[in-house]
Length: 145
Image (cartoon, rainbow, N blue to C red; front, top):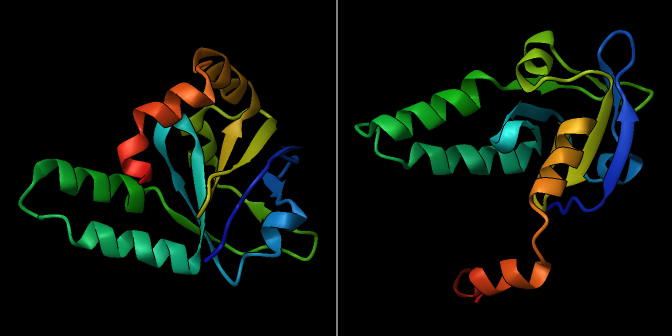
């Protein structure tokens, strides 16, 4: 299982390519799957984690409207990205536009995947979410047990 940790700041180049930090690249076994994600960021999954996510989505009842919508939104906005020789991926214009990217990006480890944020949006999110680690952990005690 991969474990993406850390926060990195990189800029998109003129062709919408983004450098993936070497600590993240060292854990990627093949194709990287990038999709639009929660809170307005993108999420990048290595192949095994992507497959695991899709297995969970496949178990949702297809008769449930919200389950169908979630599956469509995650898979319909997903692309496969190969990492080039310089350690970059090419992000498509539709993902960048939908998430409001400019040039500066924050790449944030999120355990089994990593998130790609427009830097300003990430900083604003972190400012708005300024709750303590203790408060969050306390609220999620049952889930962490």
